[in-house]
Image (cartoon, rainbow, N blue to C red; front, top):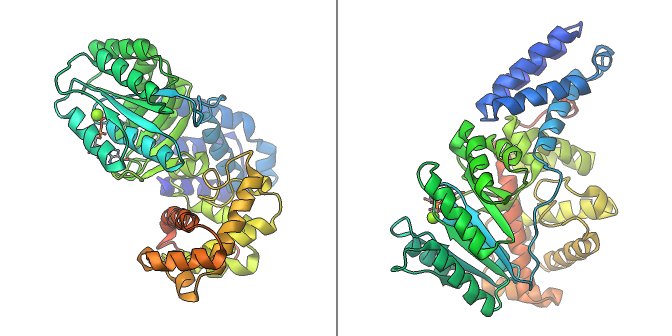
Amino acid sequence: LGGSISRALQQMSNATIIDEKVLNECLNEITRALLQSDVQFKLVRDMQTNIKKIVNLDDLAAGHNKRKIIQQAVFNELCKMLDPGKPSFTPKKGKTSVIMFVGLQGSGKTTTCTKYAYYHQKKGWKPALVCADTFRAGAFDQLKQNATKAKIPFYGSYMESDPVKIAVEGVERFKKENCDLIIVDTSGRHKQEASLFEEMRQVSEATKPDLVIFVMDSSIGQAAFDQAQAFKQSVSVGAVIVTKMDGHAKGGGALSAVAATKSPVIFIGTGEHMDEFEVFDVKPFVSRLLGMGDWSGFMDKIHEVVPMDQQPELLQKLSEGNFTLRIMYEQFQNILKMGPIGQVFSMLPGFSSELMPKGREKESQAKIKRYMTMMDSMTNEELDSNNPKLMNESRMMRIARGAGRPVREVMEMLDEYKRLAKIWSKMKGLKIPKKGEMSAL
Ligand code: GDP
Ligand code: MG
């Protein structure tokens, strides 16, 4: 896919006369590529129309960087399509919210429910899981196992066959226990069936969820729109989670799900494990969709944030798969140097939404400084290693003592490092662009 888009853009930049015909050819090529990424045909066509309105032929003809203009326009359009214009309901810590998960069987609901609970639990919430899937044998066992592993309270039954009854009982119980995030896992069927949607409608009516999350497998392809729409028609879906993004699928179906539910994607699942769960970030997702494989986005950002003289060395290290604590430290320094964090928001991959939530710039800045203080208490060996196993308990205690911070914070900082290392590990094996090539992207 990336190849064909690059090729299309290449042809574009080789053409000396930029007229509408050339632009059309280029857009057709991109269209084909997006269809291969499972973006719905209608959405691609809409995008094409919009691009034509945006891209000014005179600008192109005037010899501005054509590749960049068109690529940027396509990129922006896709970002816009992923933004339904209003944020989803956000639960508040300490205040009871009921969250209902819906989706076809196998989409990853039960797994995602646990990930969602675990994610919040780590941030100090009191989540609980309710298994309202009485359709599939073993559904309760699966949820029980997941919940036990994460030490999250759960509710379900082997005997009761009425999902509405269980859902209501579970929600009631956890409300009494003052849980602030009550998550209702529901059943799915292999196909879209009237009985499934009726069941979802009943569970929703009985539990009055604050938010219904539609869980979608990234590999369902063109089926995404109809599936999402079918759920939206029976319950008021307010957010989307796309699972199995660790697989081959580019996840173009997410655009369809957003269009069909008019709700944003909030998280993506990137593996079977509990912590393989990421806050959804539009730009890296679109890069991947376009087959730019995050790299061109990475490059642009590195180009913007990292001082010129540090760039080659950083890229070299990353291409060797070497994201060390020292690299994290240096990037923190760069970010702080650039002044108000609000301005550098969303610049370096992974450093944005999670580490520096919008509106909490002061706090984020203080956190980064705290992390850096702790890293100042590390040995060179620790800073230059990318082996997390090196950090045993006694080392963590020593660092905490040295920095005058609790061990918990050292662990938090190391978790942050692991999260970033995972994101940045995608740079491994990257072909490093030569000087001058970077800005041409
Ligand atoms: P449900 O039927 O909708 O509840 O789906 P499950 O939660 O049981 O998941 C179905 C399968 O998909 C299980 O084998 C999960 O381990 C797997 N799965 C769920 N999410 C992910 C993900 O993000 N990545 C990968 N690789 N597998 C996932
Ligand atoms: Mg399930």
